[in-house]
Image (cartoon, rainbow, N blue to C red):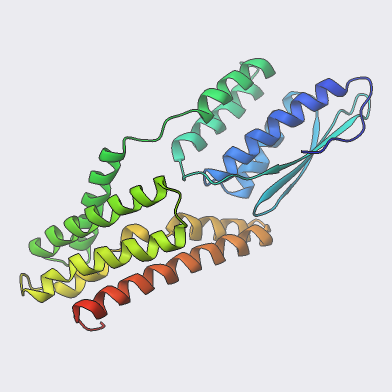
Amino acid sequence: MTATISTTYEQDAKCVCSFLSEYASLLFSCGATCIRLEKNVSRIAVKMGMKTDIAIMPRHIHLMVTDPACGDTFTSVTTIRPHPVSYEIITRLSRLSWEIADGDKSLDDARDYFQKIADTPPANPDAVLTLASLANAAFCRLFGGDAIAMLTVFIATFAGFYLKQVMTKRKIDIRLTVVACSFVSAVLASADSLFNLGTTPGIAIGTSVLYLVPGIVFINSFCDMLDGHYICAISRFFDATILTCCLSAGLCAGMMLMRTGMF
């Protein structure tokens, strides 16, 4: 973080800039779009009597806060740290911006509440694992899979998602994680075809890896593009495309190993 220029009311601008940079970084890393980030930061800054200029980059956020009363300025460059997508944190951060704008929270109160949000523990991994497996089985049914295919997809997703949780916890590269998880899920889902258990083996294999599709990243990329944040849009699009290619590589490798054929 770097700082520039300040004299009389430096501490005020500095505190606001420091808070907003941390706020923006967490909001972006949790999966918020650029337009939401800009609106929330601007909403808070206006209430605190400051003007802001913000440049959102794929890995950094450049923020300049100016006190119009005296012209003092403080600038920060904050690194965006990896963080799992969390709609709960995004919602709570957005609510915090409105509470500040409505005058319900001072800067000190906002800092304390922000820290509580940042320290929010992740959702119960066992519950997430089970619900993700059930959701993927439901997708299988949605695409026309029979009961056997749904059961196969549930087991394949359960095993693949559990592997994803383990590899993520050990901080293994996300691309390697996606390849490994899609491979495991594809191999297990191939049991439907290998042992002639059901009538829709192709659907079982195809839907067994849907939990790995980076849909949120694709959607955010499209939203950023519509709002004119082309650098972030392109970055997010390529990130999602690379993960999709890794997913496809693991899926094809699993199908080739089990000799289920390409469909």
